[in-house]
Image (cartoon, rainbow, N blue to C red):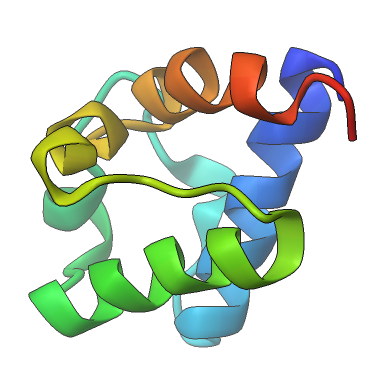
Length: 83
């Protein structure tokens, strides 16, 4: 997957988790939790969907690396490169 594919995958998961959320105007450098009013359960749902759909394991101590859309792409790109 390219970086753009990874970004779209994350956006698709967020849109599935938060159908009322709209990621089209999200600042990719801003914290997702603040911009989309994600609570901890929403965030865990995103992590679980990454595991379910893409077989990507994110250890709890690395959750902060998923704070922004940019950091998600940076962190997930190597893990999803072969998909």
